Length: 443
Image (cartoon, rainbow, N blue to C red):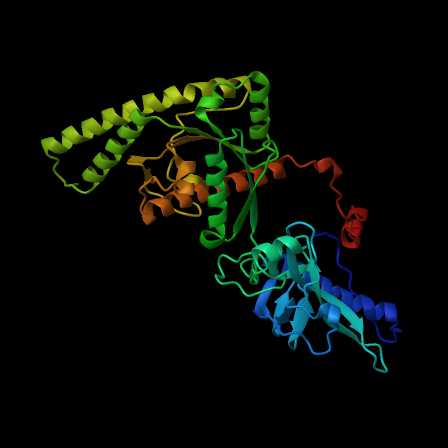
C-alpha cells in the first residue's frame, strides 16, 4: 500500500464546480475505501463464479471448434484493491494455449472500466477474463488453473488435447480443471513473519512449512513465509550441534540478526534431559492433585525429589547453554538469568496459553529464552511436520503447533518493536500546521 495524504474538496457557496473538482471529490472517497479494504481484507471470490467445461458455441469458427470452451457462472469477487468484480450473466471463454512443453494456465478475472455509448459519459465498471501462463497478480482473482501438455504428448497420454472436468477434484490431472486454488474473500493478516534456517536439513524447512500452512486455520491474524535471508528474517533456526561448530564470521551474522531484533531458535536433543523433564512433569502433576493442609511424609519426600530433579534439569540445561553464553559474550549481547520461561512471557501466553509445554515422543519440550535467543530441547520442528513414524495424538500435534505459533508471533512482534526503536528519526518530517505556527509565533 502506497501512503500519501488524502485530499478532499472544500466547497463554498458560489463555487464553480469544474470536472477537476468533481473528479477530486470522487477520488477522495475511492481512496478512503481502498485504504480501508486493503488494511482489513484480502481479495477473493464472494459468491458464485463456478467454472465448468462448456459446449462449443454455434457461432464459433472452425479454428475454435475444439473442446476447450469454459463456462463461467454469474457471481461476485473483490480484488485486493477493493474493486468489486460483478459477473452478471453466464460467460464463456476459450483456452487457446498450444504449448510446446508442459505449462500451467491460469484463468483469472481482472477489474476494468469502460465508457458506455449513451449520450452522457457514464463509466461502467466491468471485468476481463484472462488466460495467463503466470500466477495471478495482486489485482487479479483466480477462477481456475489447468496443466496443459504438448499436443503430441497429450494425444499419447490422454487421446485428446481438449479440456475436461477432473475425475477427482482434489487430484486433477493434465488438461483437467483445477479449482483447488480459488481463494474466498478473507481477512487481511495483521502481522507478517519471515522464517529462515541456517542448516540445509530438509525436515527443518518441511516442519516450518507445515507450521506456516497451519496459520490460516489456527491463527489467521498472522501470515508467514520462508526466506533465504537469515539477517532480514524475523525468526532463524539452527541445530545446537551446528551452532557449536560456527566460526567467528558466522557467529557475527547471527549476532547481527539478534541485534536487529530477530529471534534465533537453537534446537537441541538430549534424551537424558528429556527423561528428567518427563519425571518433573509427572511429579508436579501428582503433587498438584494431592494438596492438603497437612503434608504427609510421602509428599515431603516427593517435594524433595522434585527439587533435586529441577536442580539436575537446570544443571543439564546450563551445560547446553554454555556455548550460547560464550557466543552472547563475544557479540556483547546480554544473557542474564537461567532463561526460565515464566508464565507471563509472550511465548507462554500469547496467542495461546500454556500451563505446561507439550510432550513429544514421550518427553516434554524444554524451552529457555534470553531476549531473542531461544533454546529448545526436543524435536519441536519435526513435530510440526507430523512424521508418519511418530505416534502423535491430535492433542499433541495441536499443542506443538500452538507453541510454534506463539514463537512466530513473538518473533514478529519483537522485530517490529525493535525496528520502531531503531528507526532513523533524523529524516522524519514534522508537519507544521497553521494552528501550530500561530502558536509558535505568539510565544
